[in-house]
Amino acid sequence: MFTGLIREMAKVVSFKNNFLTLSAKYNPKIGDSIAINGACLTVVKVTSDTFTVELSPESQKILAMENYKDEVHMEPAMMMGDRFEGHIVQGHVDCLGTVKAIKSNGNSTDFFISLPSEYSKYIIPKGSVSIDGVSLTVNEVMENSFRLTIIPHTVKNTLFKNYKVGTKVNLETDMFARYIYNMFQVNKSEKALSWDDVDKVMARY
Image 1 (cartoon, rainbow, N blue to C red):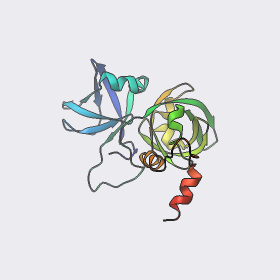
Image 2 (image 1 turned 180 degrees about the vertical axis):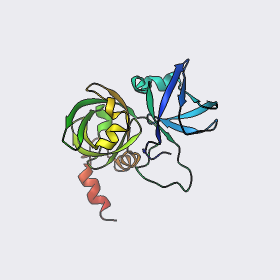
Image 3 (image 1 turned 45 degrees about the horizontal axis):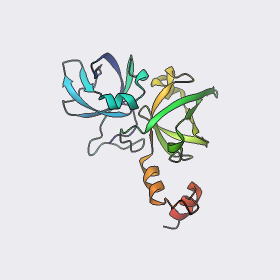
Image 4 (image 1 turned 60 degrees about the vertical axis):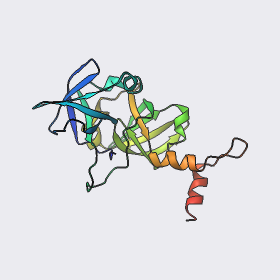
């Protein structure tokens, strides 16, 4: 389990034969789970100044591998008693999102992200989403896309500073949105519940 708060930007030393070797201040142990650009991976090798994780061919098909170069987002798995911030991130990437547009708003930047239609139902206004492992709040939801407003600090200290229109990103929808949606899923013959309907139901309890 992760929180979507990036511990540090790790440097990519090499990526050969499915093994990604990184350099970071953090010193993991062999067998540790660690999120790299939001994907939960296992540490398989440790040296005095690097550690290595393995990406299966299946993972490489799912992940935005274009972002696994130069530097990457790194977050160790939560430990019992850690301070909880961000939101619950499993490190299980649902799909790839695509940066559709980037608009400057003076003291913030809007990033518009498109995603496959089958996952758009899990994107909720003012809900949470993980982009390359970064926990963010959804400001606006459109058809098969959504808008994020990013402050300068986050842009400067994450891969967001490198994103351009067309950039692919690892996207993990909110775990609770997936669970709630499936809890209230109805038969095809019945009218589907909207998120407003779900809010009304939950407000009764």
